[in-house]
Structures are given as structure tokens and as C-alpha cells.
Length: 112
Image (cartoon, rainbow, N blue to C red; front, side, top):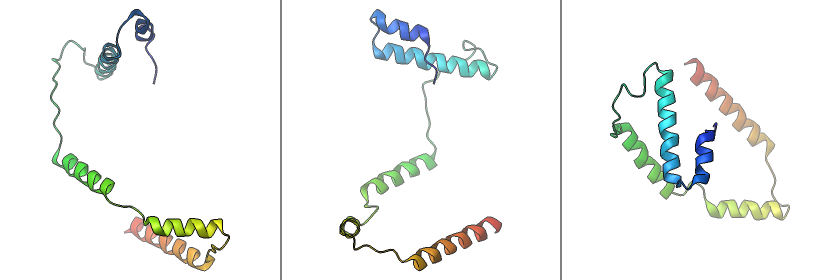
């Protein structure tokens, strides 16, 4: 992200962060409108934002995921202590079979 030098220099003139942020947002919006072929003054600014129902569902799911345990902490601790004690061994056949199954699933879903 490129920093606008005029805003950077204005920071030393006693402007607060909120004013600088507003100026940054206004500049980004003006640049985006110019790139789209519209002048910044030709449209009235609207402060309304509407979220789709899908967005609300995603926010609900995100909250549920954050609240749930993603892993078994006891199992992770047991594996950590086994690794630290030199007692952890990897079954290479099981790992290879898992990789092969994953590749098969990816290939069948790709060509389906």
C-alpha cells in the first residue's frame, strides 16, 4: 500500500489519526471512482451498507467455530510428550495410504 505523502506530512501538523484515516479513505474512494470512469463529485456518498443473508450465516458459523474446540488438547499434549521423550513413532504405511486416498479423492472430485 502506497502512503500518500501529503497525509504523512500532515500528521506532523497536529492532525489526529481519525482525520488522517478519513482522508485516506476519501482518497482511496476517489481513486477507485476515477479508475471506474466516474468523477468523485458526480455521485452522492451513501453511508448505508447492506449485508446479504449469506453474510449473516457466515458470521454465525464463525462464532460457532470460535466457540468450539478444533482439536483434542489432551491428545496433542500426549503426542508432544511422546515426541519429547523419543517414544513417538510414525507408521509410514498408514501415512502413505492416507496420502493415496487423499489424491484419489481429489482426482475423482476434479473429474466428476
